[in-house]
Length: 203
Image 1: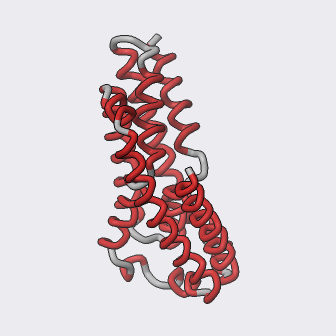
Image 2: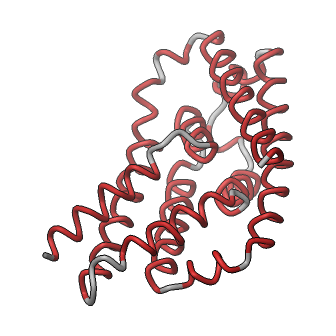
Image 3: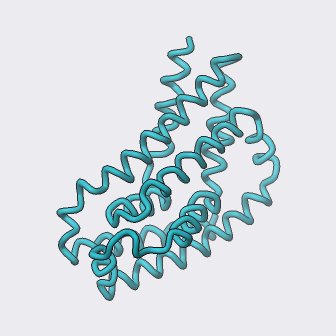
């Protein structure tokens, strides 16, 4: 029973986390640039662990009862994604991303990277609905210790994914030695971020 709960938590968590999102795009880009990867992976993983644990503990019910809080986060997230998307569009247009890729990781601001990562994590209303409400609700199917084990499985999925995404991105580094590859990546990120921003506002 406990093994079933663990596997269910891991597969469910992985299904929600691995889906392409703005946070994943940011972690991928940081991994390709080799900038503060350890810090970014730690923030994203620990944030998910915190939110999943809160959902399993029952706080997801409170979040679900305060839709206005979600709407405020949605508006703030839409503005943030629009700004980040426009920055990516500028890099794609000018080729500035390729110049940044050639710099050492130490040249980038750790403070900016951390604040950007936190914004991607906590200004996304879906992170609360997925990790706290959805996973929290599903965990109730496994009473007692099984509920905790389900949450542990989901937390493990998050940690494994962000470690693989952040540190595995370097395997794609040879491809991104070509400046045009960075322009294409930034172009895709720009379209993705701006589309998400519009969808957040429309919803």
